[in-house]
Image (cartoon, rainbow, N blue to C red; front, top):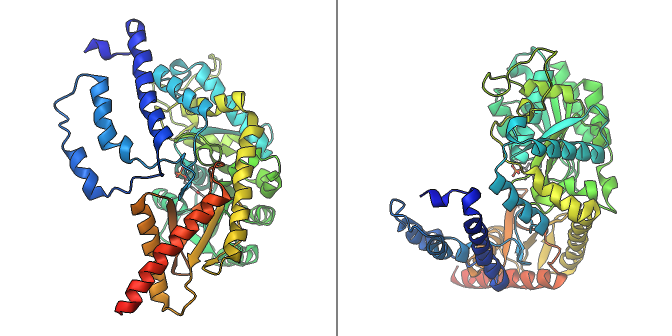
Amino acid sequence: MRSHLLNATTAAAYRHSVTEGAERVARRLATAQGPFSGITPAALAPAVDAVDLDRPLGDLTAALDELEDVYLRDAVYFHHPRYLAHLNCPVVLPAVAAEAVLSAVNSSLDTWDQSAGGTLIERRLIDWTAGRIGFGPGADGVFTSGGSQSNLQALLLAREEAGAVAPSRLRIFASACGHFSVQKSATLLGLGPDAVVSVPVDRERRMQSVVLAAELAACRAEGLVPMAIVATAGTTDFGSIDPLPEIAALAAEYGAWMHVDAAYGCGLLVSPTRRHLLDGIERADSVTVDFHKSFFQPVSSSAVLVRDGATLRHATYHADYLNPRRPATAEHLPNQVDKSLQTTRRFDALKLWMTLRVMGAEGVGTLFDEVCALAREGHTLLAADPRFEVVTEPSLSTLVFRFLPESDAPDEAVDRANLHARQALFASGEAVVAGTKVDGRPHLKFTLLNPETTTADLTAVLDLIAGHAAQYLGENLVHA
Ligand SMILES: *Cc1c(COP(=O)(O)O)cnc(C)c1O
């Protein structure tokens, strides 16, 4: 069994194992006909259930052969140009190479004595990101597992900065299109069930700052405390960006913590042409960035940044075995655990580091610009197509739309036709699109994060959707 340990004597086996795994993936990437096989959970589960976990195969090749059947053959492939569903990106090669390095060395970024240079690299990237945001020299932050954790940590800091106030009196303001992790965080932080105030959006799905101002005034009049305002820079459905300067002014007026959830929109930080869309972000107290969404990084790679690094002390706890409290005279060691909600923590920062060292920031930003431009072209297609109704012009790279038949059909039938089209497309494996609701009605969504996707792909997928929906309506209206 010792031959399975990665160490000085297994270097050859290590090279061979990693290469063999990469070979399997490479073959799948090269031959995938569509983004998905269309398999159902019921059809796939027996193969997974049949694996006897107490009877090992003893050999990597056999285990990889088995993996073909339980995973690789039917995985959902985000590199495919007709994967248009969620905020998943194709990944860049320098980051994938870094992933192999970081898991083999297996640094843990909680303390200097478990990571050394890894800690310094993460800190440089935090400083670099803070610089891109426009924060001053006092800024700081830490890598996290994802946007949900980044939002939780930001709101934890906001709660602590609000001081000694009964949790039931604290309020968080977020747009009606904000991410559900805001609500989840409020609950985890022990705030009351009414803690999150949902602020309505305008036609472009941006928070209405006039309504926010009124809500803040009402909050104060009721003797409640505006703990935080969450501005979303890139809503998950519409990519809409809340009016950051107006929100910053209101946050300052009411003494509320301003958090910008740029989990999706962070790619604009490196965009050669669209950086201005984030103007005002530099006035935030904290910012969430998901490199695994718009920086083409493998999951996970995310960070939370704060304008005043001292506020991270609210996440600092000491343990004698890990990061003991030191007398002021002792040598200062950088221990990232002092700033993190996690203890053992992956060296995800290495992926971004290698990406920037190989491609540069502008290389990443150019890819994100390409998908934003593709979304504009997709909007033009949809707006000119009588079979569809599109909700808003894209701010980033999503399109929310719905099939509308030319003949009169009851709303409920049209709703079901749209749901059916998405499901039928998924089952065919030819393309994957997302679904959401707008004003209570089911809609379809393209999330475009693949620069390899073309307008011809969009046209082809729209034809497939229209075909499935029309067929459904034809069958169901005849039988009705
Ligand atoms: C995706 C997303 C999140 C959550 O990020 P995870 O990395 O999935 O945890 C938060 N906010 C917005 C706006 C998002 O789009």
